[in-house]
Length: 638
Image (cartoon, rainbow, N blue to C red; front, side, top):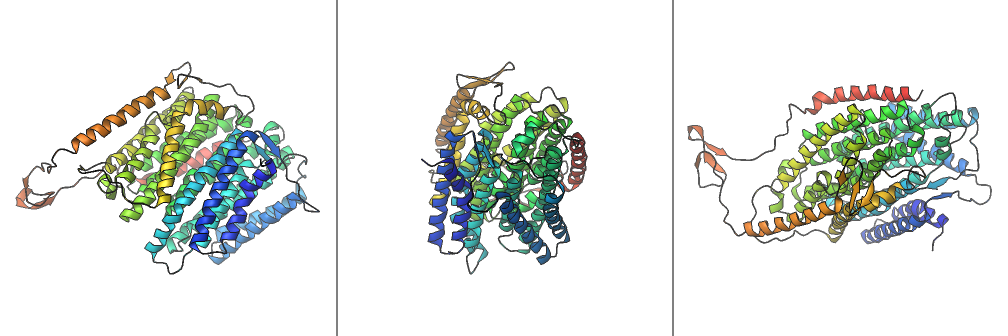
């Protein structure tokens, strides 16, 4: 049995070492073996960590090495690297942000008091464990699927030499940094891993080295560097206010100091930027230019959860404050605004990106509401959103390589061409909007938690309605056009099917297990003792308002699936006929003679309400509103 020290090394340092070794070997077989082995070991380490929670741990370094000095040296190296990229690409804003951070990093130790020693560097509870399981189980599946994806991607780009020796090491580096971040109790260590994720994001978004990908990567770099600067200012404020940089001590001593809750407000704002909330959503939208596994890993299921994790970690210190209320209102607004913008999109990856921003806003709203009901919903949403969005992003990547398009309209009738991929995508969409799946359970809990806050519950209800609208439209498009003939699944690489099947089955299993998973997650997460707001019995969750009968609804869904299969088999026996086109039909399918006897092409297309939900028209006003709500959050910190 591995000890706690060995598990931390396996989850945090091992991916760094494995990625460094793989960067020297461009051979495809070596990369495949290294990635598969690394992912397996990470998943094993995450499972072995479960019985160790809760824990506190500080590494013992040999000789004269001082952990704080090592971390500060590593921080300085990262900032010098950002400064280099700023000069290389002639981006003054990146130069300014990274240079300012570098000066602050050197200035803070001389001005503010040294933090108290003797506190653990790493800390783990159920919240940390939830993120580690997401990173170390979902992450490797995405990286495994990237193996065949990148091969097809490079063939499509007609690259003469592979770049896999740069791509996969960065993915592994990112997994290690994310594990280190969510397990960090020392904010200096947290800041280091925070900046490593910024570097990984920059490298991966610009992986293709096209003019567009480089510009989008630089945009992500400056926005995430701004988040890093605000985080560093928060560290300085924590030293001044609490004389410590250890999260658990800061949370327990949140009422101390002349600066009030300003350090916590700054921590929250850095998390909002990292989670691509308005008005900084453009870095996530631009990141969709990256290879699709990058979008699935960094920009949907894991990296953008950093901000949500940080705010959830701080919720005990925010209880009953204006800062908490500001977060609730801001998150609800972001949920609605991003959902509205998603309605007007036909680009599949952009719909997924806006949906991610929207759901993250919902999680921030729940953290701001800060009740046991709200925290229950937030924890479930963190898990099920990561699972479902990883599945949908990987599905879109498979479709994109098949159709050479991300447009939803080009996916019309996809079931007739790639039936299994289409069904997996529909399953992912149903997980987003239909009971008994976990995301719907989380949103049901969210609406119940917001009933005592009228503005928040109205925003959440409107956002939920729009969410159903754009997901249902996409699912209908995939299954449009009649299909007759035997069901013959398309051919896909083994690792592609492995990732999609594991994510789909995982979502189904965990969805049915949600009543039991809920009590396990909430017990010992965020605060040591919390009153469970729901009771579990008969496979459902109950409270004074009503019930969400997960197991009975699952049985109904299973019966519905059986009925669908029966009617589909029955319908295939019929004869396909052309639809009546409202004019004189011709011998060519889909062509009819309309007014003035002119030939007309019949076609179907979704209505995207582009006038009502116009992105260009509303983004400015949404961003302006978000800036006002940011000021409210800052005001809550004083």
